[in-house]
Image (cartoon, rainbow, N blue to C red; front, side, top):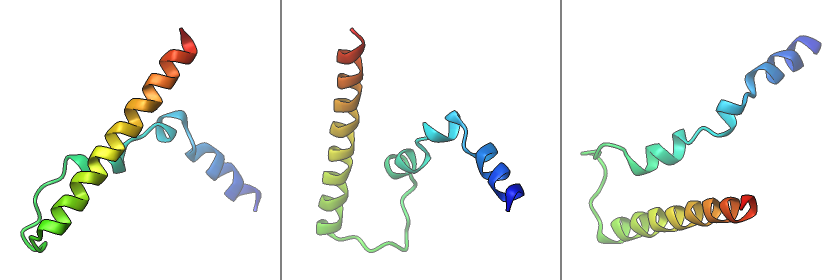
Length: 68
C-alpha cells in the first residue's frame, strides 16, 4: 500500500499538471478517413474548438490581470 502511494506521488509532476496533450491533440490531429463527414459534426467540433480557445484566453487574461 505504501509503495503504491510513493509511486503515485512521483508520477504527479508540475510538467504533467500543465500538460496540454489532450487539448493539443483535439486542435491538431490528422483527418480520420473512417470518420463520417457530417455538417452537424463539423459545426459541433468548430464550436467546441472556439469555446476552448476563448476559455484559455480568459484564463491567461485573468492570470495576467492578477499578476500586474
